[in-house]
Length: 509
Image (cartoon, rainbow, N blue to C red; front, side, top):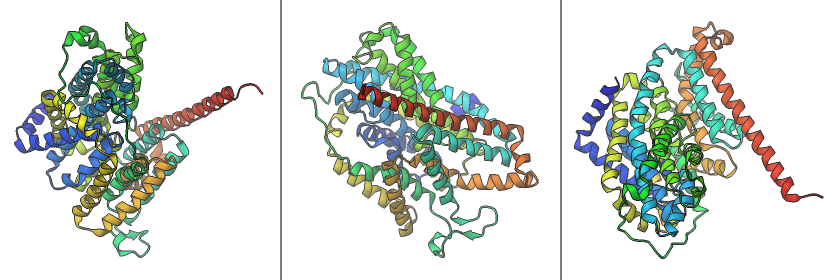
């Protein structure tokens, strides 16, 4: 099965049309990655309407190539401007921008390029080796186990992606409530429509998800338009890759390998993603380094490790998304939304029933990496011009694309209204510390969650005790409890630390 997956991926890449859209996705990913404040999730959302017009295999391959390009692109402004394209590139700013100001921008970009490519390539077989056996476990899953799995997915993203556990749980509850509108998944009875005929089929998942994740972010960005200073020296559209020995040679191998492994494994934790993967890897690379004093002042090792982890996390996020139907990040929520619109049902049986989706994912990761290997450094030069674009123009254009794209899906003005409503909801969630990602994930899982609860109770003679005491169900719920306890403990520690810092700043009375 391991080698069959790669054979299937190469067969997908034999189609010139797939290469066309993989190239489009990779270039788009680099562009949106290089534009601070845009990010992979919004990049996915802007392309989502296009995916509904394409075959599912082509759509998945294109979206995964977007992720490859985005992780490389977000480090370009981090190095050349000192502003990270995304939060995962924060550590790249310290070392990459320091090297750039020292006149070594080519070395910083070369290290970023090398780390991105190697991390992505090495993470793909690791992803396949983990996702296939995990997907085979789906055959032992019945409704009670599916209920526990859905609960684990929601709890994981609430615990990891939310600063406040209470607000994260409220966000997830909002998503579950949205999923109750429309037809009952068991009986088909219409409910919670408040006599509004447009609500009878339920709210369109794509419109809700794009509103929460993309619309809300765009509205927030519209209030934060800013320009950043550009360094006068060292900017050129022609950037050359420095030699292997000039970057550090064999000393770069351990951070490349370590960053890839950590990035893949951390990325596989639902809700974690590239940012914690990069931060953990950076700290580990500093501990292992022969020159830890260089970190934060221009360390090539730090850049290499950080970039390898960022890109490896793309593969890691796919593990729970494809094997279990639990999105590993906000961008993976968009990916599942695209599959749902194509008629696929997310869950533990996704790969077993539709293995071509696994082949398409591998093809997108490989194809995007191959294209970046060929033209990545040239694109980095072009992005010097992109980062100078007025962000207000980008935001207005993106809003127009989102609205027109959602309307084009079904030519429905009702979906546009849903988009606008949930864009406003998403904006206020961002503003007041709630988690749009948790709400969007709950929307994706809501119908399966409800159906698994009710079917599980039927299998258990309507007894919660019988259902929850099944071994696998109990084990998954125990892990869920650990995520929730860990999230509350992390929040408590942060509260204590902030209080201690406030007291220290105040000084003795």
